[in-house]
Image (tube, rainbow, N blue to C red; front, side):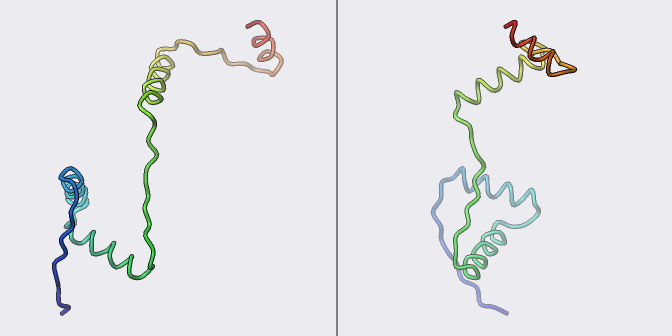
Length: 93
């Protein structure tokens, strides 16, 4: 059996709690996740970080307003059966 050791890592409390929750939801201990990342780091000799894109708050607010209007059927252009109909509509604006 391999000898184990302890590594202390400083992180903010919310990150730790969120990581523990995700690991728990996946049904694995957080230590298993961290060991997997460490093994990958040693094997690849590279750091891989994946970040989800996040909208600026003002852009997200505007987008949510547009979605709400669209769901309510407001500020929508009509559908067209031909390019001529679409061009005629746009020329009238």
